[in-house]
Image (cartoon, rainbow, N blue to C red; front, top):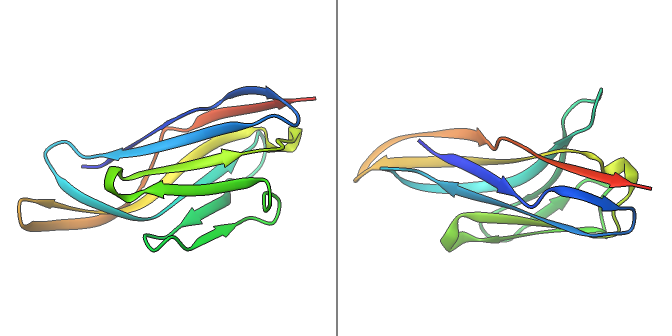
Length: 126
């Protein structure tokens, strides 16, 4: 159906920056994704919402990342980005992309599902 593929994770020192990307693709399907966003899960902790962006560009951020992270998207490419600046050790986690995507086979609407990427590791060292 639809696959979300993340890239851009890695290791960085505190104060550094990373830019994550998440591209949606659907082999053999026409699809449209909305409500794309990023979640993260640190070891021993529950997955938490980091940021979302609507198709109209409306954004939300967790309080812990406001002013440091910026979410953006390219609707034509069904791609969402997360620019992370002033990284802190507590930002260390696996970051997951998520999106609600509708898909069609030709003109036949097949459904809408929530999709998750495979996750990308972000490690911030002091």
